[in-house]
Image (cartoon, rainbow, N blue to C red; front, side, top):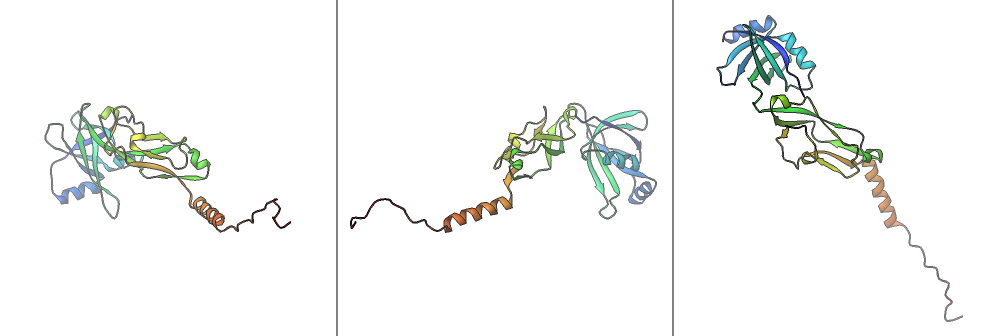
Length: 216
């Protein structure tokens, strides 16, 4: 399960766009903490610390312990990260205040492990989903979701309902949504088609009989 990371947050006053730009130039990311039955709280996060945390995380679905100026600690879920479309700079971050009983929704990386039997036989594994939206309590939040596909043969289809998810984790998509398929390669399909065509166009062998004609 994902362990909360500690992130220092300094309080800030609610200000206009000019002050926010200055805050970013000074190396901070304007942020807000909302939810948890309390008023929204405006804070600022060290930009480098936040970038390092995101760069080393499997996804943006991260639990943090916000160490807020003044000695308060708040468990929070990284809800949204806004980037500049051109520079990629982090402009703003939203945190959702939670506790151990707050159900959260998160997009978790989905990994298919192992080499399918069908791939060894000449097929190819086609993965349709690379992340999965799930609902769970904070203590049940996984860093990644993995599933062993080594037993899949050519023609097998893996859907969400056929996966075993960590305890306490529920997918938001329907069970019949396809995650992966072990399919025949184009080369194999072409070879089969040529073989079938060759059988259809093959000359008919004359029938050979050992019976004597009536004229003999």
